[in-house]
Image 1 (cartoon, rainbow, N blue to C red):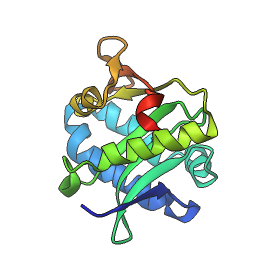
Image 2 (image 1 turned 180 degrees about the vertical axis):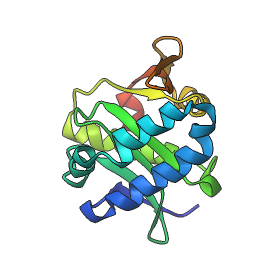
Image 3 (image 1 turned 45 degrees about the vertical axis):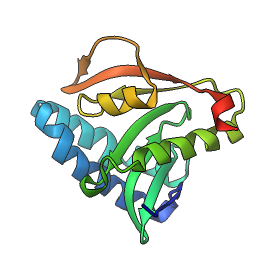
Image 4 (image 1 turned 30 degrees about the vertical axis):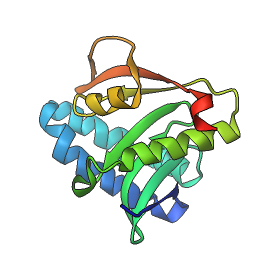
Amino acid sequence: MNYTIRKIRSGEVEEALALALEVFMQFEAPAYKPEGTETFKRDIVENKEFIQKCRNSVCPIYAAYDRGKIIGIIGMRSNKTHINLVFTKKEYHRKGVATAIFNFLTEDLLKENPSLEEITLNSSPYGLPFYLHLGFEPLSEEQETEGVRYTPMKYRIKKEELI
């Protein structure tokens, strides 16, 4: 598979968040209460403050592109140690897209912060097998907040593998 990976540009935030909502509705929302879907929309795709932070790269989003179109994204919180978005278009699932974005993101974060030792995220039930495959470790059992189901996880960065 031939695609490009980079941080998104300011003008691509809406396209990235539209992809997030599309994939969320296909794969995540069916396992959530209606409250969870509304929480996701409110906190992510309709949150003007978050959108502005993405535009300014305060909350960076990394993406894979196929023929100029975004096919997968991974977004970070402003602390750049916590992933808050991981979505790949359905037709690109299980083709290494999210893994490639994660590897690119990790290398990029280490350039900015060489002392970075771990990355955290809250996995949805659907994403849990993928994160375990990447090497994330659960920090606790599944939890639920405002209808959103998640398992807190941590990834210890193995710097010797990135050299």
